[in-house]
Amino acid sequence: MAETLLINGQWVASSDGGTQDVTNPANGSVIRTISKGTAADVQAALEAATAAFPVWAGLSARERAAIMHRAMDIFRANLDEANRLLTQEHGKPLNDSNKENSYSADVIDFYAEEGRRLDGTHFAGDIGPTHSFVLRQPIGVVGAITPWNFPVDLLAWKLGPGLAAGCTFVIKPPSEAPLAATLFVKSFVEAGIPAGVLNIVTGPGRSVGAEIVTNPLSRKVAFTGSTATGLWIAQQAAQQLKPVTLELGGSAPFVVADDADLDMAVPEALRRTFSHTGQICISVNRIFVHRARYDEFTQRFADAASKLRVTADGLAEPDADMGPMINASAIETVVGHVEDALERGAAVLTGGQAPSGTQYAHGYFYLPTVLTNVNRDMRVMREETFGPLAPIAAFDTLEEGVEMANDTPYGLAAYVYTNDLDKAFYAAKHLRAGGVGINVNDITDIRAPFGGMKQSGMGRELGQPGLDAYMEYKHVRYRYRDPR
Ligand code: NDP
Image 1 (cartoon, rainbow, N blue to C red):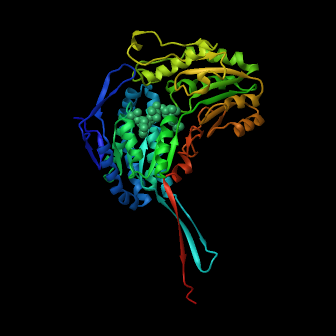
Image 2: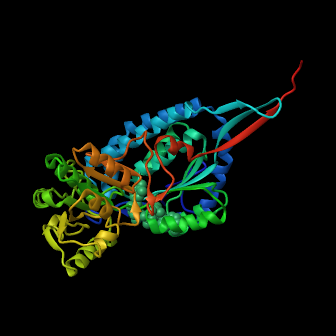
């Protein structure tokens, strides 16, 4: 029997004995069988987290930090195992797994120290002899629900600030990729975190995840995933006025100005479009190039895309450019977007099909694909593809390029490549996205807020706002007697 749920410090099986297989998307093999939790398991986990809350919140920030640092020492000692698990369950090449796991440990270490630096405000009252101070207190039990594309990293973005603030957690890892995340949490258990502070209930989002959201014992929901699920969670949480942090889908534009350095822009666009097989919320979804540079950019980009190395074994080829997609429905979305675009007049410059070769026969593979002759009516220009697909369109003025870039319900990340300071500032100001990269293809920095505008989310993770999201303000006003 799989005993992979963590409830009140114990590794237990699901209350009804249910199990689920975790498979390798590169070849379909079963990696491990784990528990499939139930609503009753969520209830038990929430009760444990509720009981542990005063214990954890009652420790000093210094004591909490010591446990968090110790946990990451343990996790780093097991990094090889974590990297292998992540590559097997997700398919990403081993170097990408190492990057994710290492960064996750950095996030926990960072917030352990940020928790110790928390300060507050106090001031003399303006009515009689009063004095005010403002306390910042942890919200309480948090439900953390994460997706499969960065199952460790996106959990760390929640646990780091939440634990530092004094919150306790019930975690629902993604069904496709729960193994490395579970190992990550195990490090905290081995580091001596009090029982019940961290609980894991694996299982279907529609039952286990939904119970975490709707159960009144969870006092906040921190969610990363699709916009559709995020909207549903926001509606449910509203019934209880439960605060939410929602990191949702994206459709990042990559804007190339007429003066851009293509030696820089082409490889950076390539990496941000195709790494993780395009399955990143800040992946480039749409490319807009000034007409004067369109042919040159497009040719160079398509040539480079056709040479990317797709691996069916991310353990054996750790530095490959990309692996498989996560499942059949992910492939269907990409195929649907390509077919729709072709029907509406687009042309495929490279890719447009699965790679050939027996090594790819049992996995979910699709070649890096570049489309031209695209227009805004095509699904690929309006919806998140979340796959290795790059449509390239031309614009005549930067204003027009920015307008085309903003023509989406999403607003998570945007990139602009230019060496003209005026153009850079114009784009940074007018692109409607929570993060804008100027001549840089990654907007993630532990110290900076990360999150989306429009339908890409609500609230921010990372940076100081990422910590604020786990605390509530309390104003304490004190009247004192003047002894004179
Ligand atoms: P989903 O929304 O389908 O799933 C995300 C998580 O939510 C999973 O753990 C899932 O469980 C769970 N879940 C599903 N339904 C419910 C429900 N009704 N109640 C509670 N939990 C539920 O997203 P994907 O897994 O498809 O992830 C890809 C999406 O995530 C993309 O749109 C991507 O852009 C977005 N994303 C956003 C990021 C950001 O920071 N803005 C970062 C990374 C991804 P189960 O696994 O069992 O289905």
